[in-house]
Length: 79
Image (cartoon, rainbow, N blue to C red; front, side, top):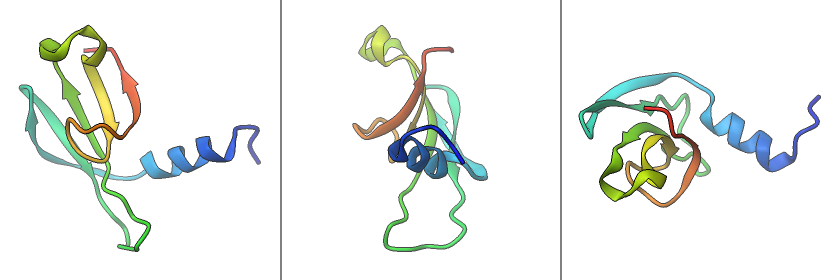
């Protein structure tokens, strides 16, 4: 069991899994989650780096449904 909210658990389940190298973004490797089974509720998940070109707020590593998109689940400002 967990003491987190249901939405936290959904995010964790969404992010957990195997990732494969999927190219480069801002001179860093980016990765795409390997889908185990495709379902209607399946979303693409990317782990990618965004540099300082759009300001310090956006710099760092991101988990999102597309590279540079507006739907992101997690961010680390670490470079």
